[in-house]
Structures are given as C-alpha cells and as structure tokens.
Length: 499
Image (cartoon, rainbow, N blue to C red):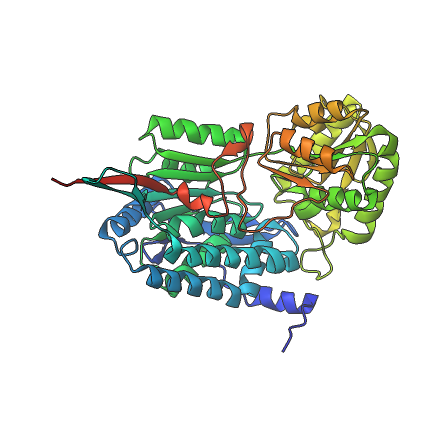
C-alpha cells in the first residue's frame, strides 16, 4: 500500500521520533566522558531540538581505542568477503526500511525539505552502502611480472583506523561516501559528524551494528570541531583522515596530520563552480540547470553552480528564464510541507553570514535581479529566498567567495577565450558546466576547465560509478566509484624467490 506523505503524516513521524544524542562507541551508546551536552536548534523553526553528547579528546580516544582493537583482532577485515558483503547489503536494506525516520532526523538537523531527505538523501545513502557492499567480493590482488625464479604478489590491504569528518549539508550521503568504501576495504572508522547534523549519523551506526558490523568497526563521536575533530585529526593511532568541508578547515586538517603521525589525508573542500552559457545554447535547458544547480538545498552544496558565466547577448533573456523557473518550480516552504523544494539554511549564524555577504556584494556594485532576501521569518526559522545578481565582474566578492546560500552571480562575457579565463579564475576546481550546441566548443571547454567534474548541457548528473572530487583548493582524493576504495588501502608487495 502506497503511503500518502502529507504534512499531518510527517508531523506524526516527528511526534513519535526518538532522538538519540549519545556517542556510539564499541557497539553501545555512551554519554560524553565529561557528562556535558549541547542542544541543537532546529533550523526550520528556531526551536530547541535534540540534546547531544559534547565530545572531547577522551571520547575520541575511547572511540579510537575501540576501532584499533576491532581492526587488530581482524573481527571484520578477516571475515569471508561474502559474509562482509551480506552484512553491508543488510545495512543498506535497514536504511531503506527506516527511511521515514532517517529523513525526519535529517530534516530536523539541517532544515531541508523532508521529501528531499527521503527521496534523495536516504536513497543515496542506502545506494552508497549497497554499492560498496557489492564490491567486497570483486576486489582482486595482483601478480606482478617477474622472472621465472620469483613470484611477486601485490596485495591491497586496509590502512587501519580511519577518522571521517563529515559536513552538515548532506550528512547521510557524505557519510555513505566515507563509510562505504572504508569499511568495505576492511578498515575500522571513527566518524565525527558536524555538530549541526549528528542525529542521522548516530542512527546509521546503530543500524550498521544491527546488520552485523562488529563492535568497534564503526564508532560515532559527536561534538564541536575544536573539541572532537581536532583531537581526531591529531590522534597518533589514527591512520587516515577523510574530510569533507571548507577549504579553511581542510588546511588545518593537513597541518594536524603533519604535526602528528603523518597520517593519510583525503579532502573534498569548497567550490565556486562556473556554468558557462553561450548564445547558441538551449536557454530553457540552461535556465533549469542554473536555477536547480545553484538553489537546490538552499545553495548549501559544495559544487553548486554559483557563477553563471553567460554570453552578453543573451544574459537578460536567460535571467528572465531563470527567474521564471525559480518562481514556478523551486518552492521555498516549511520543510514538513510535502510540496517544499527547498527549506531553511542550517542555522541563524549562517543565515546572517549569507545576508551580510549579499549586502557587501551590493555595496561593491552587484545589481540584484530578484530574490536573495530573508523570508518566512514568522516561522522562527532561517530562510533566504533564491536570488540572482547580474552584470557582475569576477573580482567581486559574490563571484569569488563560497557563499553556501541560494545566491547566483551572473558574469557576462563576449568571447570563448574570455569565458574560459573567467571560469578558471578561481582558487577552486570542484565542478563546472558548458552549455552550447557546438560540440567542438563543448569538448574544448570541458577539457580546459580546471575542475573534477564538468558537465555538457546539463548539471549535477552523476552516479556511484563516477568519482567525485576537486582540483586546486577544492581538495584531493576521490569519493564515489571504485577509485574511492583505493584511498582507504595501502599496496603491499610480497616477493617469493625460488632457487
């Protein structure tokens, strides 16, 4: 029987929800060693939400100790591949079975529409765990070429204890990007979710344990970055840190790795992605891509198409089409409204930062075409409407800084060479796109734009078969695809000499 997802349905889910805010360490819930907690404020209405354990270095040490014991015992890494696969597939199915609950936890934490949490975040989280579970019995070692008197086995072995630090914009999805390949490879993990978005991470760990992950293989410690993330990155018994977040914090993580045990680091950082539109492009398709590419998830997306680099002759026409798409298709509503397409920003501090950046951009001369204003303030939540600024130059702050809000900067150009120069004039290199009917030009620019992913005549299309990550200060290492497993492994050569 098909569910009817009404506002009343979601209110009932919310009223019956259990909010577990303790750490999950060694297969059990655990209060912070200090006994301290902190309260998460709900972005959708500004009301107090869950109480969470306020972790510290002692809690990180307990989690790392558990993870190390699980790894050294081989309770997970030495299991038969088919058994590990079975457990991870069961984990994925449990995520799907508890989809409504997980979606509500995500929406409470981050303020996104609950239907998006269910239809996108829960779905892709389960798909990610399943993808890497399916790979476990398909990972082969190698025999290297040698002479007749030797045999060289090249083995791909797990690193050990992985510290995963994940952001608040897509918690379940990015948790799956880290947990799936690292656990499939045989590692143990200490997950430190963003302090704004811990609820789904705790529940994911509990479901993994229920599916059969041995105690210590997946531990979750909640708390603030300085008090938990930093000790995790500095810990001498952590072999790798996989981090997704801002470029500023990513640089700190690299420093912590160097200061401690030269642990492996993988970083997926900020972006300021260009969407280049030529006058011969399908402007209707470009408008849909630009609007959804920038405004989805209220602009809180690392690879959002926040720079619209548009040929001057069609700028005004394209902006009109983007406004029409935004007003007709991208409904900003209360997150429990099933018709909501975008919801609240993550917290009041971030909303004020976004509004301050908008005000600073206007002082620099950016001209508002529409939107980019605080709305729904009567709800008590943190909402900013999607907006576009036009006739900008690439040296303006709205064109250079990662806003992480629903703000699109339109920058006109005249020639292909100029468009490419603007596209690459950024410290970031996460994603980009080219819209044109000239396929020669499309492929020239897609090769020349310095970014980890470049789309042609579309935006934000992908699957787990494609790697995701950045160039330049957008980081290094790749999430998703078979290649993600490599970063959680070391290569070990075993040489046997005969005679």
